[in-house]
Length: 107
Image 1 (cartoon, one colour):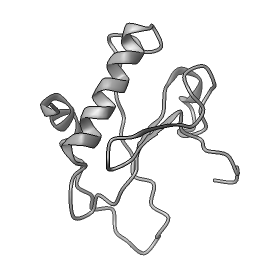
Image 2 (cartoon, one colour; image 1 turned 60 degrees about the vertical axis):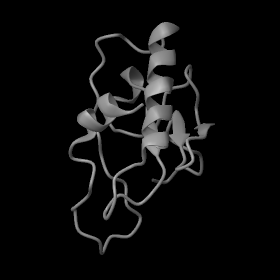
Image 3 (cartoon, rainbow, N blue to C red; image 1 turned 180 degrees about the vertical axis):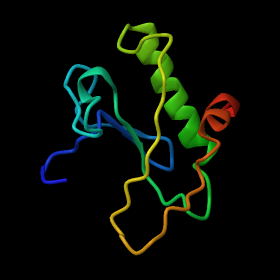
Image 4 (cartoon, one colour; image 1 turned 135 degrees about the vertical axis):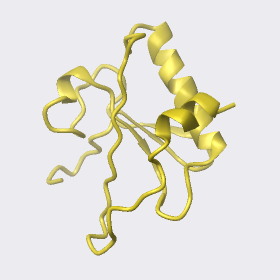
């Protein structure tokens, strides 16, 4: 990533705090090819040995529901997940393969 700005629209920390990157109305710079028609939400953390915690997932669920309620996100949205790792020596194994189930089970 060559930009010095945050490419995601929102970031969510492990304690559930939502940080605004580009917000709802600005095109993100997170996923080539879909930035203009998507909202990028990043979960902050290392998910190779553990999954995102329930507080973090609940904040994301609330953020998505807010986006739907105020027409920033279509009710029939699709999610895509990816891993952005700044440490290239770590393999592709991560612990968020059951992401949709984790979101549905968030409190």
